[in-house]
Length: 258
Image (cartoon, one colour):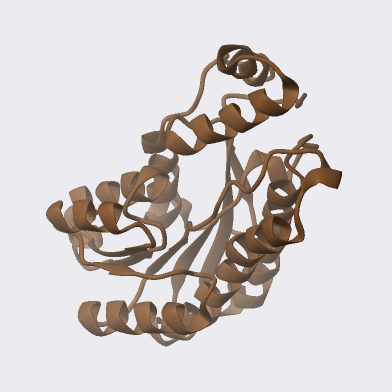
């Protein structure tokens, strides 16, 4: 089987796939010839994804009924499922713990943790039926290190890492590989919002906040979404055959936080 034949037979489901990291992943798979379905909550992003040729559906991963409907539609259209990219998540508030509202805490956990569970629960039966598959759970370096002023987000991503590791053992006998990817500072709209909020909390400028974040990175640079997409493809390709239960950091060498 040629490389082209391999990808042409593959079916990919991506949550939050209409913008940012998700769209970069969707584009990488589409360019290889795979079938791709994406969901998102933003209408503008969804329309853009559709204009690019992606089957796209509105879906809030915090709602299990919406997740079930999205997965059912994607599987029916593609005739099955090979790869699940559990990508949806939010940044949550950037504030001292005593200033974080119950609503913000619960919302962050509901989307970032419950959403991953709802997607896994809906897709794993299809991967088992397929006889093999790959699931990528999008985590963060925030789930590995101490992240001040980001307790809801950091704790949610630590949970995602534990979830992925547990699934890798549970699903291994079914030839389903599960890995987590832990991005660092990623170029895009989300990190701009995070830096803006943290700068306001610290009483510094956006530029100063950016410098603080990048001085913890060995390469002193942010990561591009396409670099994360490349790792997703690697893990789903035959090159990733023996990789499961791992947390792949794509962060430019982030060693500490401030």
